[in-house]
Image 1 (tube, rainbow, N blue to C red):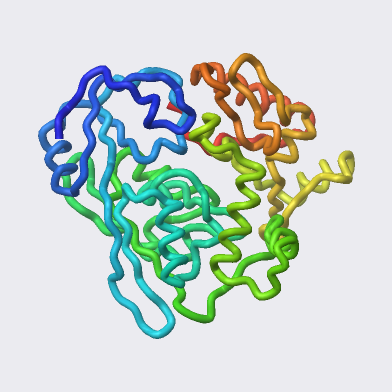
Image 2 (image 1 turned 60 degrees about the vertical axis):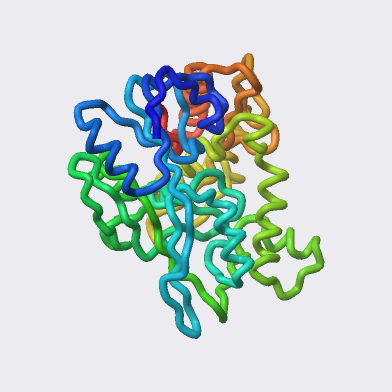
Length: 337
């Protein structure tokens, strides 16, 4: 556990942006994490997980602490459910595949989402009609200032659409070290109504889908639409799908009758940001090495040597174009550093 100086973060962010950490250290146990926090209380700190949900626009003039805590275990189970704890540094997709191999249901729709387990509650990540909050029980987190461990219940996390307490009141105050999920052992709830899952299963001649079938369908869809960060730098969905009032939606719909939408409540509608960006003419758009992916307009990509500032400038241009055309504001889902 050695602190390194002027450390390159290019391999530690999925955009593949070249930026340096003033200081860098990786911790592999909770004890190491607490020791580093205790011994460096006077330094500014930056907590780094899988690097999948951030855009680096500058060097980080702080002590970057890479959370590399590994391990998973079954805490308890009964005939219907199992409570599984995963350490924060576990790769999310690998953890999802492990649960499926155990025939534990609940996470299969979120297959192939980049990143680590520890960051999933921060964003309340979700895909194809399922979110973390649906199976989340609790998470343990270390308070940065006091090094005390606190357990956050589902209610205390205050989950919303890509929101949690860790992006609001508790922002930059805690390091999540482990997460507990409650998963099904039988009578699994198979969610296939959202997106293209039903069509994908039909194309594979699957009539009665298993957890593995759903996961495979999601993986196939994502691989068609989304670039592999190991091949083409990206951070998955760069923008949130905007949720607007039905009144605002109906106004827009009068002018654009083909606008896509999902009802989320009696008074609110979710509009696919990818569709808005595509209609604004930016799908497949490229300026230098910063671009909008050709298959999924929600995804901004680094074709090789783009800087974080160049990708951010493109993101702002896309946001403005969508707002100018539809009057709908789209927000970045990715953390801009």
